[in-house]
Each structure stands twice: as C-alpha cells, then as structure tokens.
Length: 557
Image (cartoon, rainbow, N blue to C red; front, side, top):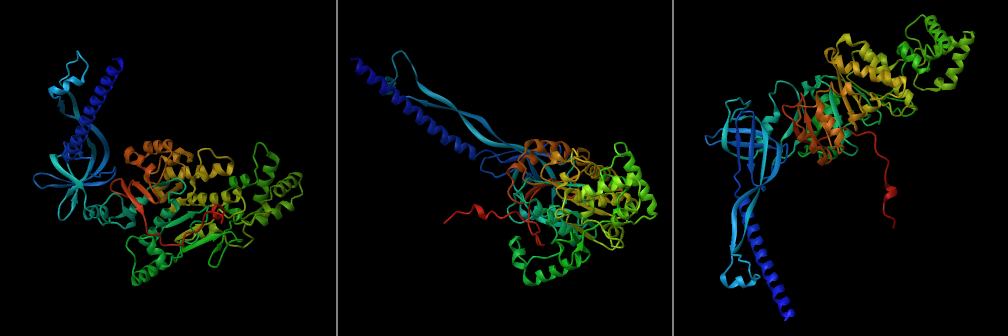
C-alpha cells in the first residue's frame, strides 16, 4: 500500500511538472511575441538629447547613428550614447486547471490554476541629436526641436556621409569608414583640428602604427603643415614610398583604377618631395641623410648631462669643462674640437674630464658631427624642409636616442618665437616624456614636452603623441591634449583615466574600446564634429619596422 501511494505521489508530481512546463513554454512564446511588438520610438524634451525604446531585434550599437522622424515629417540625425536591456512586467498569465485534473494535487490543497506575469525584454537608452536633416543641409538643433513618439531607425549611409563631410571650409583628411553604418560613409578629420595637441593610444596589435601612418599621409597630401616624426621603431622610414596598386587596393574599400592610382602617385610624389629620412650611418640607404648632431647644438645643461657631470657632486670637473667650452670661442663646435681642447688642457681636472669621457665611451658615438659636417639642427633651422623622419631606434644606445630627441625638442622650443606651424609626432611617447624620468636626459625631454604642451600652441608647435599606455605619460602633458584617437584598449584603469581627461567623449563610448578589432577607433576632439567610431583604411606608403617572424611556432611535419 505504501508503495502504491508513493507511485501516485510521483505521478502527481510528474503531472504538475508537465503543467508548469506547459505554462513556461506558453509564457516564453508570448514573451517573444510581445518583445517583437515593443514600440520603436524616441522622444526629446530639450532638443539636444533624446531617449528611446526599441525591440531587441533592432541593431543599435553604442556610437551608431540613427534617423528620427516625427509625425510632422521632421527628420533628425542622432547618435546612440547609452543602451540597456530592460525587463518589463507585462500582463498576468494564468493556466486554469480542469476539474477532473484537480485529483493530481494532494488532498487538502485547493489549487485552481497556475499564474505568472509576462516579462518583456526591450532596449532603452539615450543619445545626442546631431542635427536636423533637410534636403539641403544638416543643421544644428535648438531647444525648440522637441518631439514625442517619433520613429527611430538606423541612419542611411548617405545622411551619415553628409554629416561627416563637415562644412567644407577647411581641408579634410579621409582616414577610413564610419562604423555601424549600413553602407560606406567616409570619416574625414578636420585638418584645422591638428592645431591642438593630439593623443593616439592603443594596445599592441590594435593597428596603431598603421593608423598613424594614414594620418601622416593625409596631412602630407592635404595640408602644408610641417611634420617632424621621432620614430623609435623605424616604422615611418618609408613614408615617402608608395605601395604598388594591388597593395593599396587591398587596404581600401573602394579600389583605385590604374588611372586613379597614377594620379595619386603623382600627388604623393609632390607631397613628399620635401620629406627627408635621417638614419644612423650603419643603416642609412640611398636617399637617406645621416643622423648626426653637433655637440655645440646642445645646451650647456644637456652637454653636462651627457657627461654625467653635476656642478655640486663634481665641482672641479664641471668647472674645468665650463672653461674648456668658453675657450672654444665659437658656437658651432664639434665633439672632436671639444676633445682636442680638453687634451690640450694639462690641469688635473681636465685629465679627470678626459678619463670620464673615455670611460663613458662618448668618443665612440657615431652620432657626433665631424668638424664642418652638417647637423640635423642645421636642417631644422632651415625653412626649406617639409617633413623629417628621425630613425632614432637604430642608434646604438638609449643615451644617443635621448640626445637626438633633446636636440630636436629644445631647438624647437628655443626657436618658438619664429612661429612656424609644426606638428611634432612622438611615437612611443612614454619613452620620451614619462611620468617618472629615469635620468637627467630623460628629465630634459620630459620638461621640454611639458613646456610645448602647455604653451606651444600659441607658437605653432603642436604635439601628436602615440603610446600603448596612457598612464605612463607625464600627466601635465596628457591633460593638455584636446584630440583623442583611441584604439583597442583592455586596461580599465587606462580607460578610466582617459575618460577623466577627454570629457568631450562620453565614457560609454570609450569603454567600447575593449571590443575593438584591428584598425577600429573612436575619435574625439577638435578634428571631428562629434565623437565618431571608425575603421582606418587606405594606407598608401610602405610600412617600415616589422615584428620578429614567428616561423618557429609553425607546426612540424
């Protein structure tokens, strides 16, 4: 008898489970149907921003463009800033039991049915209104542009293209295609925006070098801005060499015809006619200039730093060195002339100075100009150059790299009153202006970049800093940057720091950088109208430095 009761109980439980399963299946079906009928609407109460709700099936990534149409046929272009999936309670769903099935339940329990509420999933979020869309223009909105219950959908590529094209008053730099657009919409940077300092960052493998090359190419093609590139990885030593047409087309969404490529080749040749690559003698090729500086090009402070002389720790040697330089009686003295003057000074202090130079190996540096030889700084002082690429990474020592960097930066700062507009591109900027310099040469370059960042713009000195880790850059420099090109970045602490500095780009947009693929970026600042998601494409020149081959990892036969 006990066994029979157990069987009945198990049967009842099984039937109850089946009923609940039936209810859940019905509920899920009804929830799916209800989700498809979620209204797809937007409203604005201030004419500047909007809120929206939409079904889950509508693809609206953060940063994407939308078109909003009101009942009276006014159209707006907007951008999605936030997006959340919400669960709403819907109608109550009940499953009534037939009388004959009441016997399934234990005695004493009067259960007439099973009830639950539908839970409907939907999208909710907010965005900014970029403008009112007419046949002739996209115009800024005002506080009168309010609406309720307007239809919202993904924007047409043609409308986005019109918006991204800008006013046409200044040169623009085509750098790639807008993301989250159904079709092609070219992103163009306002060339005038580079009159502010720019920060480009992205972790290794994000396409940072490729993308920086595109920006430099377009600045050469579309503007007359002078450019100096501190190139520690030899990435831009072939910036004046155009790729073959098949390679150029492989990197474009709109392939060039043979005639179009020929025209581009002629334009690029003209644009890079004033481009000079400086490389150490050991690696300099045909057409390159040898990278050398004159010892007299350095300031007295820099010279003493190269010799690791401190006026308090090494007072006798420091004083002897000062008198040797005074005795030269000229400005443009070479390292050889300094050494000769020291050798002809027979004081004990001069002898110690000579031993210091020998022990440091300074005489072995290929960096120094010989007497009468032209220096990099001589070129900087000339007005004829257009673009200089300085291959500092192939110098023999870090100290030599820092001497070249300091010679360039201090010359630009010293001559700032000439007001020659110049873009100073510093790749791997954390090695030039770090948060914590590790020696005096490092401190000099950091201090000089701080000065340029703080006051350089009014003298026409503009920075473009590129790095993998923003937190390693001196904070007073980073805080002066107005433009941001952010590529893939997984570090939440770095993204948080960038959000606090580049407040013109909503933090929600910056956080999308963790999902970026190769070449994807979010742009913000003076060179775009509004924060813009894009994918860089169309690199024209040959890329220089390359990674070490990983053929050692290939599968063995």
